[in-house]
Amino acid sequence: MELSLWDNVLAAAVFAGLGVVLFAVAFIILDLLTPGKLWHEISEKKNTAAAILMGSAAIALGVIVAAAIH
Image (cartoon, rainbow, N blue to C red; front, side):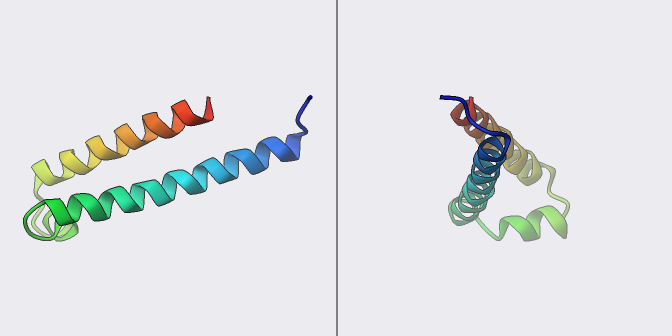
């Protein structure tokens, strides 16, 4: 069974939406697990370690979503 272009576009949009939701949930969980407010640490205090932690989580989630799409 061959999928049409619109089926593929819809699937990509669903996975993109899933990735955004997973990223938001992961950010909230990481914020609860770390002392202080993570976004405040990154944006106002310029905490490099907190930014590396969040960047690592973003890369990990990207790998997971890419593996799910593949």
